[in-house]
Amino acid sequence: MQLYSTKNKNLRVNLEEAVFKGLPTDGGLYLPLSIPKLDDTFFKNIHSYSLNEIAFYVSQALIGDEIHEKDLKLIIDQAITFDAPIVQVEENIYSLELFHGPSLAFKDFGARFMAALMSYYLNRKNSQPINILVATSGDTGSAVGSGFLNMKNIKVTILYPSKKISNIQEKQLTTLGNNVTALEVEGTFDDCQRMVKQAFLDTELSQKLNLSSANSINISRLIPQSFYYFYAYAQLSQPQKPLIFSVPSGNFGNLCGGLIAKQMGLPVTKFIASTNINDVVPQYLDSGIFTPRASIQTIANAMDVGNPSNFDRLQELYSNDIEQIKNDIVGKIYTDNQIKAAIKSVANRQHGYILDPHGAIAYMGLIDYMVDSSNHSNIKDANGIFLETAHPAKFYTDVENILGRKISIPDSLIDVMQKTKTSINIKANLNALKEFLMH
Ligand SMILES: *Cc1c(COP(=O)(O)O)cnc(C)c1O
Image 1 (cartoon, rainbow, N blue to C red):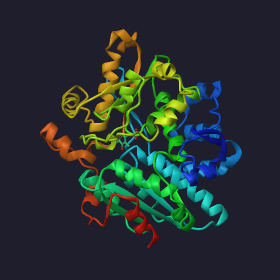
Image 2 (cartoon, rainbow, N blue to C red):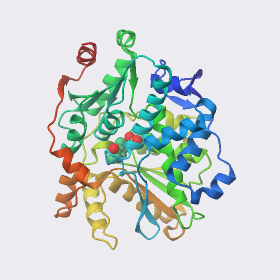
Image 3 (cartoon, protein in one colour):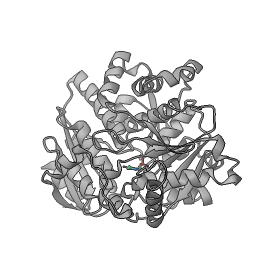
Image 4 (tube, helix red, strand yellow):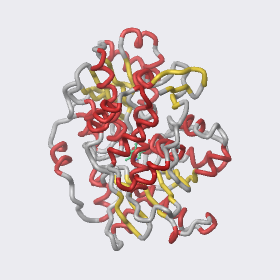
């Protein structure tokens, strides 16, 4: 597999290098040099494939002969140990439930695939230990931490914004122990993300430590995020209808996974980029101008991103042609009050479906697009799928307040809540991070 930097098409690396480097040194992002189309036989048979079979075909097409079939199957089976069912919420409206992994959020797909891939490469050549750095707005940290937990030769450092993630999210990432350390940063998620980026560009650090990133900027996080778009399609009973995906977006890694699936031949009519009031991408789709800014806190906190790290990838996937981007992607923006209203109203309908705050945004984006007749889309003749990225119980305080009643909490969450938090407090600057890493 050949990858290039979005800042320089001539800078080429293979998958192994892209996975361990995380970011090219020129400050761009890695993307596959070519995105192959899957053949007709794959799409003809897709409805009989399991999630792991789909994952195999998709990743094999992308990765090619860099990893042997047999090893790729093992990597997939190590990473994807849970299902991603579509659940009907209303007529022609489905929730693609991506929260059945260990951290109860969709980031388990990317994090576990990356962990399995890295450990495959490390074991193959007995290389020196690596340090994984990861900034989290809530869900990445626990997914990465649990994905790498107890893996030999790998140390994981998680940076999270103090007091800006939910109680459960904090417990999930500060109670893992062993090779996983949580740094509690006095700042925002954007500060954490900036510190990680700076650490990679710091020559002293990169000379002394074998650093690697685990954020959604890592290409190995992106690849598995295309699998479940195919799998959602595979589960539809009337797949011939126009297909619309609504993606609750923050750093836009999840949406980029969908764009790759489309380029590989998945017949997607439209993507809805649904955001909270951190709406720089919907604003860009509207005005053509991208203006990153500081993030604002919302109840869909995993999407509180003011400078989406995958934005260059999104543009590059369309050769920077905004007209083409607008043709495929529609932006929708929602406030906390709208999120609350949606959670309440959907729970009180026929199917009694309980949304989490992130999924609620995607649900609204989907419905608002599908009922708008100016889109030439008729809700009766389409399949609308919104990505439900977290289990509602991860946000039970908010969700229970909104519904005015208790919701059921999975046993794994009850267990983690009873554990004691262990974190190290640091200031929001590179020196503080270096101080920790070098000692
Ligand atoms: C990370 C996250 C998102 C946003 O995904 P991006 O790939 O950053 O756009 C949405 N919902 C949940 C629950 C998340 O954890």
